[in-house]
Image (cartoon, rainbow, N blue to C red):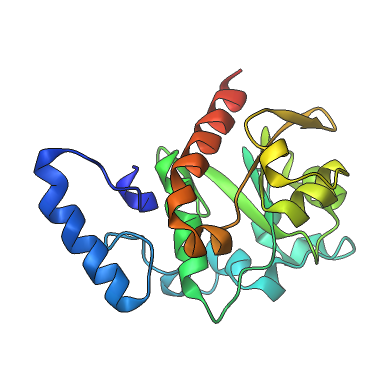
Length: 201
């Protein structure tokens, strides 16, 4: 699971594989592992993943919820900035992060489903009401400020479980930030583990 997030596993048997992945990723300008999930573009047009993958499709209009099947009830609501369509690595890393904790943007067998919404285009209260999540995962400072109403540094918001409308909220880094600062992926993994624990509480 950690390898899917791009966190190198320091085991002797993995050293050769890890080194190859890092070299290949660097050559391609990527910071995620080579065994990444397929891009959301491979999903069928009618799938929930393709609905939430494009930033403009993630913009939820309160008066037209029936046009966005991605806003069906789910255990997880993921709130962050709109994913840059010119940088598919953001979508790929997000999927890897969720897959590492058994969550998918599409609901495959034995995995909980997550719904992603862009905070700058979506009324959060509308999204929470439509999805009825058990946990909200917040990606980045702007999303955290919009949801929690606190303009605090991200470091001060991470590492603990917040609450919003009776729902557990965990804050971590945005995919775009993690792509620029891959060394922070270990902290993001700790945040994801915290979110899983909050869901199970």
